[in-house]
Length: 282
Image 1 (cartoon, helix red, strand yellow):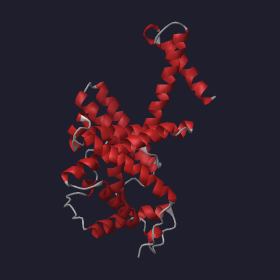
Image 2: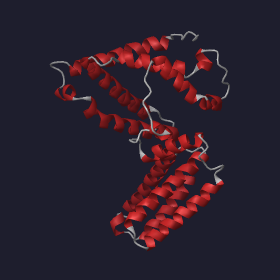
Image 3: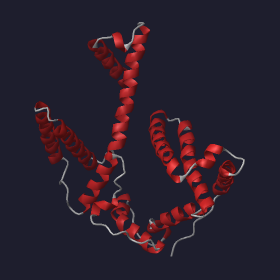
């Protein structure tokens, strides 16, 4: 028996703001509203949903570095707008409403947290993770959702995921049935092996094999990240941000001298790069 979910004053305030957002979106789609908004479909909006998700991802990490959540607030709003936009289209078509979306996710949260809303005893976060598949199965059973026939355990992972995320997900699935390295140590050996095979392909100028070996090397690194409990997409994003910052430092220093990267030597840029690293550490 699920425990009652209390309604706070915050929920009431949020409801007023949320209702206003839904009303604004409905007005934009209505006759006499915005022609562009009125023309949109699930499919035409899909790219924007992906873009907003990535911009929110970046805002999260920027907030973590600076402590300023202003940009994160804005990006979460843009992401929420996409959910409301899709739900408004759905309501017009008679597919579902925003209330159906909210109700569905609330039920999912309750079913996936029996240790909070029920009598289950799951004291540690790892206990929850270990019981996750069972919780999801219970959720599907309670919702009456039909199980899609799957030829492979890995079919549960969408093929349209970004490559790093897909690699992380499919290796987690395989690891659950014991198909995995015992520890991170042997993966370092695998990375060395894949690196050597890549170098061999490069020496032979075998373009097709080079691409394959690059993929194998990245896949091995994803596995290492998983064993070290590091999310590879996040790790690479942080490195990208670090590269942007350091390269901007190089550009700015050259501008002070009245120059640009086009007329600077590699040695000069390398020297400024090392200064950027030192400045960051300081």
